[in-house]
Length: 239
Ligand code: HPA
Image (cartoon, rainbow, N blue to C red; front, side, top):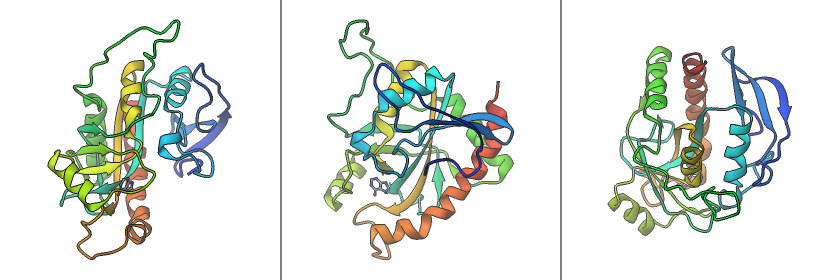
């Protein structure tokens, strides 16, 4: 996705940070009359794999542009029975299974300082609350629970891996939630995620459907809910 369907575009901002270039130009615009910036984390044409995303540049470019609150939209596989494809959720916690990603601004480079950022609330409580209030106004059903597993990708998981994530207490699985959440915390940005269930995780589909067929069948319904939710939420976040 190069831009967001509900975004009235004002300008494109090419930016460069000390950590390199973000995945794509920042798209500055308005959603429901409120200024917002869209950044396609997989790049224009959706070509950058989850492990190849320059998360540090993405978050830094947003912060440099004046962003203070980030709402991450993530298509995920569902593990919890309450999270059927087409449903959306605002997860409350996460488990990081990624590796080898540039995951911190505390990297020991000259000028960086060592910070042990707190992750007790990986998703900002006030931002999550604002999303629930907006969901009520927009009459969009959104689940307020869920632990996100973040895997390395780009391959999908094996059924045994999904059983392990379930034993770890995870409810959904995606590939981009980390280090994004931790970097947002290091920069002091508010951060919440709207997770869109697009398939049952490997080995869990009651209908035995292939994962890609499930994604194809459910993504539009989920994304239209996200659009309605965002349009309702932004006016409450302005200022
Ligand atoms: N696993 C990991 N990431 C995903 C999935 C999945 O099943 N579906 C969408 N993103």
